[in-house]
Length: 366
Image (cartoon, rainbow, N blue to C red; front, top):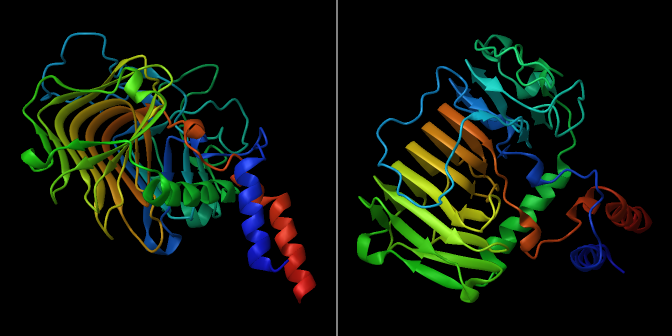
């Protein structure tokens, strides 16, 4: 069997028969994932912000100009320390924090996924000058440790972490969501030029038998960006439902002066907004906003330098793209659950035993 056929067989087998090792890292272990190459600069910037907590940092104020929340049972962002402020810097891009805090479940454990910020490059390559990796708002939490006063190596940030399994997973997810998943419906916003605007109680209802399981909803915008402006948008679904919203073409998602909420039995980890933005764009731009239980992904990491920009935002979700820029942000982790998506159950094995088969084939060929 030649190398290309062997690799194809490995892919096929891992898709169908193999389950991941319990200790393997996956995208679900991190609320922030960046994919910018170290040569291209800042992968993750935070100023006056906190991850793994909402509304604790005194310099991070709740947005003050949002529409009033509608009534009902919608879940909204609540304040508190959640200890899930973990980030993965998968290609060694620079991390620069100023007046910001990382809250992670760290009780002396420095293993991947427990420390706070994990970088696949060395610490010195991953971080900016030490004077900018700082935190001036200390909460003096007791057991477990909830804040790092000095974000230095093995104290909030650590380098030389093997994140190959995550990059492999993201590559599969990109091809799957962009090219392979069949649309189960559309959300037609062509008449409003891609906008939900000045609507204090917009409801997208995907509950009921017609929407059981995985739904892939294409948002049609008539050649415009998808924008939510001065509105409350509630997404409603049932327990066991998963919804992936794909923004049409190469358009992006903008949210300002708005709240994005969940209602019904749908889980806090089961709604994803997905874009495939053009080179150098702000894939997601959120200003003066809150959202809960929603993940934001732009996974085309090939030679792209796209950014998620948040200014004055409180959220529970997951963000993945090349660059992340948080200014006056509080965030905790409601990471997207990929178990409902037909993803390779063991893409992690590409970094271990199955890749060894390919290596053996290469050596034999040589």
